[in-house]
Image (cartoon, each protein chain N blue to C red):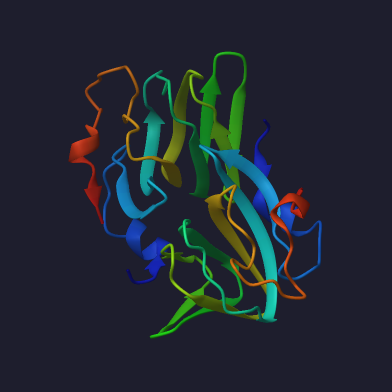
Amino acid sequence: MNKINIAEKFSLFDETWTPKILAESNGQLVKIAKGSGELVWHKHDNEDELFIVFKGHLTLQLRDRNIELAEGEMFVVPKGVEHCPIAEPDTHFMMIEPATTAHTGEVESQVTVAADKQQWI
Amino acid sequence: MNKINIAEKFSLFDETWTPKILAESNGQLVKIAKGSGELVWHKHDNEDELFIVFKGHLTLQLRDRNIELAEGEMFVVPKGVEHCPIAEPDTHFMMIEPATTAHTGEVESQVTVAADKQQWI
């Protein structure tokens, strides 16, 4: 493996809500994605999901509150907790989660990217 | 859990090579540390170790090459691979690794912080 420049990787794609895989570590995948607008409500029954925002603003809607993440802020959505991300246009964020994590959990939506279709970048 | 502002957490301590725990996710700990100068050669037989640099410059010496990490760059040191970090003064970095990971692997040095002595911040 070589070192990874995170900003350079973000410059290689424009699609939103389409995680790209940067690295694997201890069975977890380090992914980056761009967001804009709202994704869908979903949960991951068996996986915690770590979010770190690199640019823009990401709102993680939970059923009981909203988590507002600006650049340089992070949050772990615990397994089983329903969430729905909303991003300002051109928001860049990282997710770290087990390789088994389904993109939109138990929900199949138009934007869902199957785990075996998520690409390395 | 609440959201975490990473820069704010870095502002809370000055010690070098003393990882502080920010979060737990899927049995792995998200830690931040400041570095300055050289740590010690060591390895982790069973754990990959993910490094992300937030400020400064971190050199991960491996036995066959050096990995040079500037701000916004990351690298995974695979399990079993000997490494020795060298940091420019006031370098800030994040590590993500299993809770079982010993600070300086099999090596006990003056700077070693035992896993059960690593503090949440």
